[in-house]
Image (cartoon, rainbow, N blue to C red; front, side, top):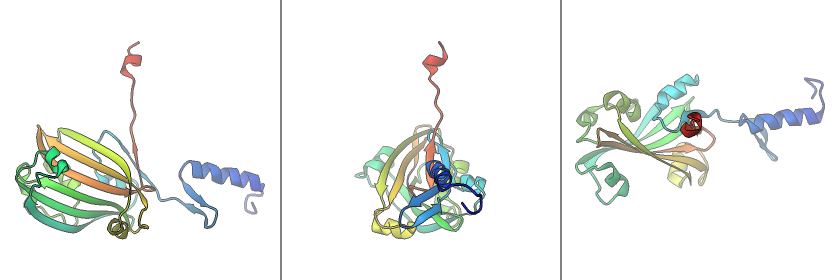
Length: 205
């Protein structure tokens, strides 16, 4: 009010518009703060998280938290949907944007489909980025839901336990052969999924 010489109601409306656009977060006890910038990606595409964060103007990093080779678990419906029967490369990592946790990733890669993944260096290179270059997908399946961060997930993501998150599960295939299954967990204020659609029937009338 003092800076722009306007009424309290005008300031309130302006901040309300910023909140509605997702640019600020209002809290009666804590005041108003700038919201975490969100990455927005097309729902029907498979994004390269590293490229999207770099496009947003932030520094990107990938931290490998765990790596092992193990047999496929035929009792796990997610691995069964991939069609995996042999050895899997099991990876766990963290995507980091601007020095802050952005997404927790748990991924398996079918080594029968992509044998070279076993010797690839994922200590700093995100597996998803590597796969987009070395094993381009031809078919994919998404499953998206809201979930709450478990204590261990919250610790890695640096959010409170039970924090609302967007969970993306994705299976990718190359000419019918399963390549990878990934589960990615994004704090709700850091990622958007969006897509444009066209009504083909209406467009033809």
